[in-house]
Amino acid sequence: MAIFPSRKNQKSRIARRCEDDSVTKLRLKYAPYYYTFDRQEGTRVWREGKPYIMLSSNDYLGLGNHPKVVEAGREALKKWGSSTTGARLANGSRTYHTELEEELADFIGKEACHVHAAGYLSCMSAVATFAERGDLIVVDKNVHSSLWSGIHLSGATAERFIHNNPDDLRDVLIHEDPDRAKLLLFEGVYSMEGHVAKMPELMEVARENDMFSVMDDAHGFGVMGPGGRGTAAHFGLESEIDVISGSFSKALSSTGGYVAGSRAMIDYLRTHSKQTIFSAAISPSQAACALASLRVLKEEPEHLERLWKNTRRYKEMLENMGLDTWGSETPAMPIVLGTKEKVYSFWKDLLSKGVFTVMSVAPGVPPGKDLVRTAISARHTDEDLDKVGDALAYAARSL
Ligand code: PMP
Image (cartoon, rainbow, N blue to C red):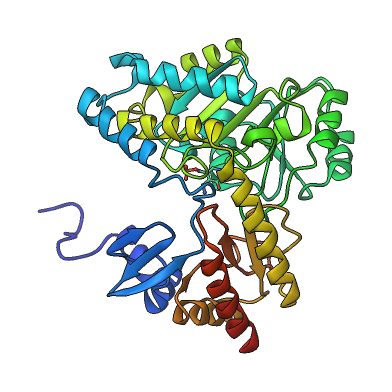
């Protein structure tokens, strides 16, 4: 006789929890996420024969279909195959890794750089590798999920400071043990808010308190600073900040990410980072596309100029309509509406007028800041922006 009752035909607690989850049910009911498009061309995507202007992608420089980028990806696939099928520690690096890392480090203004197969891995690694149990991480409370994952994995204690508020950072530190190892964590450009970090003031506090500093510049790289060299270059603070992480899935129109720092920091990361040691290397085509985009960024300044021209025009348009952009200063442009219901209705109105955006509601954003997130690309034409303007006016009227 069995000691335990048979579980045949009975679902486990975890399976039931997943099937009964109210948030998943809500998502499936409204089905606004995970849309499948069957065609893409420039800033347009098609679903069931209908075209939409893509206004939520982070394709800031619009390089995804640039002939040099597409050709580089194709060539890399031919030369190297599809994958290294393993971690670099085990299977070795390829010249396409080292070439990309050297050019990136030089561009960002750091000694060395290490690339991963996802920005999420890079950003997580930039925290989890350098902080350890017993350390204190003082973190801007609005940072990205990848950085929170890094915090949890590190085992260090975390204290939050008010978003982009160096005075609050100072206040948090007053109560802390001066001899404890501390890490300051923030973003260069905040992905939801479009805010630029008050980097000079934050770095001053870091200096006063002997803090190691880590900045995620996923949305600042290729967008901010001279030639798109990022937020640290924008402020001339490349040598002050210890570590910069970022992603290739925004301005560089690829996938993957990087961690940049001193040679010693990157050697340490290659020795200790689980996200590197136990994860397969970035694929040849991903790396080649990122490198080709980086070279286009250096050689063709018109993309960056066009991005900022579009951003200025778009922001002015939103403000003239009385829409709340949360003070965004960058191409990442939220439209804050305040409640889930308003966000859903606004999003649907835009969709009905052929404009695709993304909804972001609490707890993904702070309470009362439920928003429709939009992002501008250098590739949006004047005609695209006219059409977006008409759609926004329609959605704003029915609010
Ligand atoms: N950091 C920030 C601030 C991000 O917005 C993102 C992606 N949205 C990431 C890291 C992760 O990058 P990826 O999507 O390339 O993995």
